Length: 633
Figure: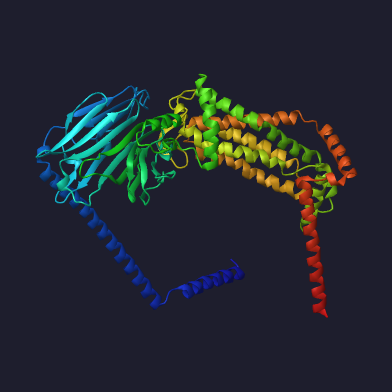
């Protein structure tokens, strides 16, 4: 090591030591920092203690409510928890006489992931529902009471909790012809036990949302606590993060939703403002997707003249089915139940709502396999967008055949400072030949919303659930060609074949697109495109890490779409005669030259704008030159 090197290291060390010393805090600053830390720790400790007090208060209130319920409903304190079953051809509900609520919901004719004939949405303690009433002296929690069933049939049951002296609480369930159950509750002979200010009933509703499909992570993206504000649209809590939110507006309904099945509670007289909703994502090992909790309030008549009415939906998230079920509601509200099927943001929802769903249903009714349906939808969309795709390609082809002329016109403008003049010359040439360089962007702008719309539609299409096609066992979840036990970062525990095919097709299409764009560029643009193409080639790799656990149906659709896009581009290239195209452009140039007014379009406007910019630049340079001359004098 020579002297200069040693000197350099010494100087660097001195600079670092000096910088550290200069930035080191003074004693006053250290003291202030310590005070801030102590203050923060004190605030944190205070917050923890406050939270503990709140939890203790909740526990105390719950215990008090139970004690009060016990004191008032001593006749309903003890008993035997028996099961009552309501059923029709599509739904079976099991209700318990302890608490008088549904403890099991089975949707018929939908196989579960273990191959059983029906899907159990929840059972046992996976869902808990408690109605709470506040009296003058006694609070009532229905979850502590044993009810006596009466008027029982396959579709109806009445539960009665006896409070003695002719007083009771009655709850009645009526199951409709499919997935909707009507619920009513009223107090009998208990008017004097409630405060004159009591006009509402508390509802505490919880559910451990069960994993129903094979892909835990993918299904979790579509499992959401969804709600509808009164006279407004629907919304939902975050599907990826723990979220607790107080909804300040009144609500029409709240739904505990997973990817393909939901439980919805609908209020006749709304859920009061300030409902507290919570959604907590769960680990894969638990077998659950989310923990849901809803703390609600709704109308209650202490005199017992008017019953509190709710409706419960237990069923599949099928767009048209939800529309039909809503017609069975007796509440006369615009519930927008079909919004449980998320179709994307407004533009994409519009495409799915008025195009994709109807085409999908039409093809499904023709009896095609769901894989064939996805292929036919792709072909239909390609047919619709083909005229624009062809126009885009011809615009690119025109620029390709004009490339030698552009290179000739700009060969002396290869310096960086000549960039504006080079662009101006290029636009002028395009204008003379009637070519628009921006026409190639239009088809992409048209197709991109369709791609995004399908991204929202396919994972929510329950019709794909359990449907097989070729090697794919279930189009609604991933199709592994290999699986392993341990989850790897960025990949997971499997490799999806349709995802690999999608990425390969994307690579092929990106290569063809880059080559097409490179063939029409000159000078520095062509060199920059060579660098850009490597970045574009990395996109399929990025898509692999994103889409590996997505549904096979979605990956298959993207694969087919890209394959046909590449095929269309290949056929257009093979059927385009560059010599004939150049002859057409030369004739167009002569026509424009004889009639300059016909030179219009985007290229002409861009050329004119660049001429104006060049003129402004020339004037600025002239002013700057004059200013320097005056300063030199």
